[in-house]
Image 1 (cartoon, rainbow over the protein chains, first blue to last red):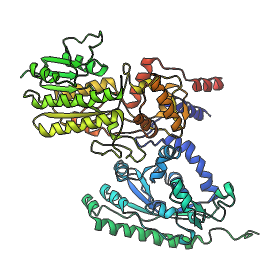
Image 2: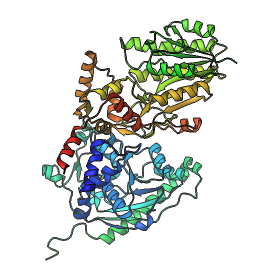
Image 3: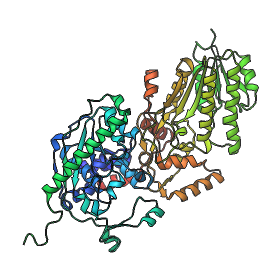
Image 4: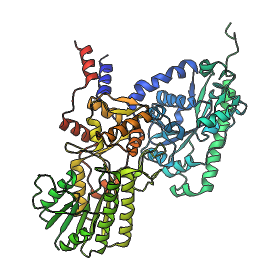
Length: 277
Length: 330
């Protein structure tokens, strides 16, 4: 109680620290993460493995697959790293997020920033754990039929940042997000009119209206793989496209292999009905 | 060699303080202050005041007559006193005339120009932190920021043509402090300042004492180049409001813009489109180059500068805090 009052007092008087990216660790720990944690624990029952591959301190770049129509997987990874590895991951988000009211500043307060080489380099130089989803909208917005097939990994900018900073790349596979909003169609014209990358049709949305927005309770596994070292390169190699392409492919193949294996390990996304009876 | 410093914009607060500090320096033989209006009753010591309109070529005669060795150009106005076009004339044409005179001069060997971090603009596509080498994502296309952007262009041209002259450009974050009177300090001075619904920008301030100190060092030492000047750290707008104990009204951005324009029309508050950008998207800059070059850091962090402003204006009292205290009293 005492502690909570002190917290309230700090919030009311503005006596707390926010970093230059707008990250508000106190708000993130005590409010924002608590809002998504029930989803992590109860709804998706996330299980995490490979935590020994996440360094306890210092810069590293976590690279993960992106899926699920709505980027909830990013938040689940954030909770996993916060709760299980004790690290505040700094996610690199899409441009769109920072143009939208509310979402833009909440995302900054939660420690995310806009995906750009400048911001990634700056965070890595400061020894932060940075998280990136190189597939971007191509990954989150892919149709259900394409599930667990990695899309193109951007232009490899994330590898260049890791090489410049000399930090390891930690491949991360997330299984489960593909099934939360199975995207079976796309309202392309309406999406374009609204300035959105896509507007999904799922079995329940827009059919059931707001009810269709409830994500399906699939079973999730998140695995962090063995770090891929980048200190065998010189920082100047970040400007060598061939090095970057090859390294990007290596990371992509590693994550694809991890995904295949993890998917087998999980089995069906939803327990067969009446299985417990 | 005798040192003679010319300070433009000496009738305004920071210019006057700088001139005063320079006049107190025994190494400097003459301090000449110029402005379009005479300084307020304030005692400027041995500063010689010359009333010059920068837009006229008279400034060249002042520089020649006084064998000026250092020019500190402070005279950039950020708020339109009469009209926007007069402000632009003053800022851009004034700088051109001043630089033309400096280029001709055989005595000037150091030019320091005050600019602003507003030249970086303020958009959702910005890098989180601007360095001096960052290009603005969107070149400012209105108001003060546009003027400063153009002024910097002329300064770069001057530096290229007169490589023997040490040219320094200082990009200041918003000034904050007891005597600062700017659109932003007036904004926080309102009883219930409006904010833009759904946005919470990062802001940076530089305390007036630190601004004067940076200018003094740049005017007396050779540090060519461009430098960001800001107090360490950032404050979110919401955090500023909480520290001020202010309740703010969040308005959707079109309503905010309309209100801003109405306030400007009524002469209550100066409001320009680039201020809307700052109040939505904010801006942060890196100041490592300044610290490394001078071996010195601003004494006030952004938060300390803001607190000093609040203290000096007597802004206190925090209604939500009072409510909390009332209910938790034992």
